[in-house]
Length: 369
Ligand code: ADP
Ligand code: MG
Image (cartoon, rainbow, N blue to C red; front, side):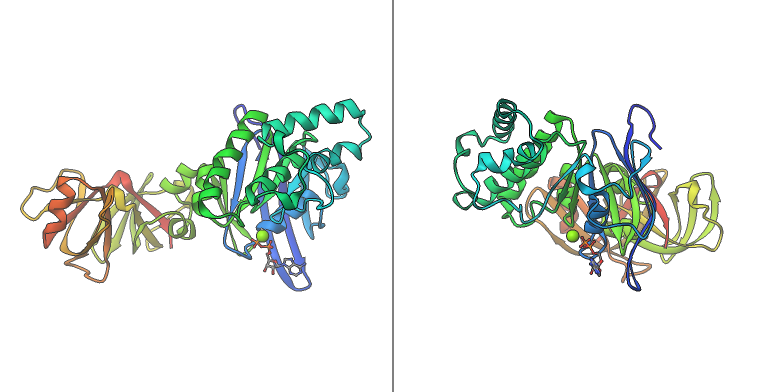
């Protein structure tokens, strides 16, 4: 349920979807909070579009409940759900002008003509398309068509806008512009957006919260920072940003600190006590490359840090970041990736052969393997 100031708008409880014997979604529990920008992130085929179609009412759930404001809406027809969808292919009417495309949803509701005109004009203004009102979709660029599709979805003032990879067809520069634009529009109209993407960077740029999917299941839901700093499982630790992963087994747990026996010796890291880790459990110790420092061979080891001696194998990135790889003497195959802002010390590290990787227990996170 919701907490603090947020309020749950839509909730999926134990939702499943099967086609014949194919289980496409399993045990999906997800809330969409009022006013948030929620992004569903996952590889192709992981079930993202299926979730969006279930919420929109385009397909029925095989099991579970879909709720709106706490009331079950599984059987509510599409046109009675206060949602609008922006499809990847925009689905604009080719024979209608921009103005007519945007006004369509209001016309079918038989609103008074002056109200239709003023609301349409306001939304076209919002998406910076006022001067294109009389054009036809074929006379617009991809980004402009995308904005018409968005205008058409928000003109009816839906409670929730569903967006299925709407930027996937745009080239990179336009895509970045549209991300900034979408985020800005969402802030201005204060409407809840549920946005689907397979692009991690896009998810981080847009989302208040990200729901990570894989194989029809939700892996984790949280703010981008939480997913990055405290991945809930090995899948998210691997999938979400570059990470060093050191396999081992638990030899002790005390509160939120786990001790793990690894090829590099006994290492400590933080863990979520809710995972219920116990001695002998197989785990991955995770450390982000930017949290690791390289010490010159002779320098003293900092207190309360793990230090691993090794040989520098590779270095790269001439730009703002220097990336180095250290092969630990104890386990040369376990290459440790280190990323530092390019400065004199990074340059000095890159020039060494022997060095020690050093990181803090506070930056080490342990998840079940
Ligand atoms: P995503 O949007 O994450 O790429 P989808 O939700 O579209 O994934 O699809 C999830 C899985 O469900 C895929 O394996 C897909 O082939 C399958 N699927 C989707 N729609 C149908 C359908 N109508 N009949 C059978 N299988 C389907
Ligand atoms: Mg899809």
